Image 1 (cartoon, rainbow, N blue to C red):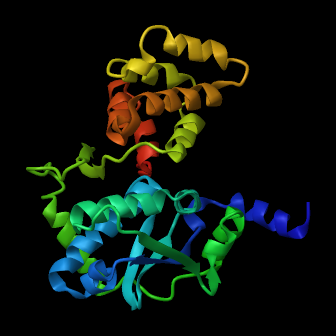
Image 2: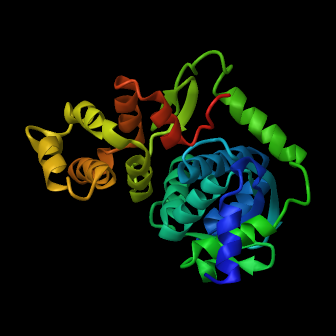
Length: 293
């Protein structure tokens, strides 16, 4: 193992709480009629665009914790979103989502719904950490992660972002009470609002890595409303992938659910199944919620 690999290994073993880094996500749109920078400069459009960004990031990292928006700025023709990450695993999840195109898909979905941008309009993204354009090195996420770590924040959160965050929180009502009406395609978990997005391959991997022997229990809960898991399907998966182990069995379970249900295989249904089986901590993992002390 060379010195660079040794350095990466040592850094990966550090307590995540001591880890931090920054990146700038540039967002754009191919249609001049739906220019994101122009929407940001419009006082009425700014909040809707900020909501799109928050939902996109929530989908990409699996929750609301572990990262912070520091500033939105004019990077003509793009809108720059300066991000600080405080958790290495969460940052890696963000990079994986960006690399596989999920982040761009989430951005398009939310922009279509909240900004009335037509489905055919192409959204554009670019990602940088310091002087490094990471779109050129997405085939090596370890390198991208190191670039983010080396790019430390040079500012505190901008006052404008603080105001937008507060406005977004107020739009959902007091934290102690559920909102009167949830936004379309959202669900509640622990009195917090999450976007009810379609499950992805990254969700499969996260589920399989943490669920262990409880995958069958979750399968039974999902089985009630999933034709692809009816009958002996779960037992067949257990037998077919027994030699590959628990990870593969759990991975195939969620894969079967996604394949059978299509776009109806959504995050909210999985979280409901985890709540039903009393696997609250696993639901928190899927949503990227930091464990309570």
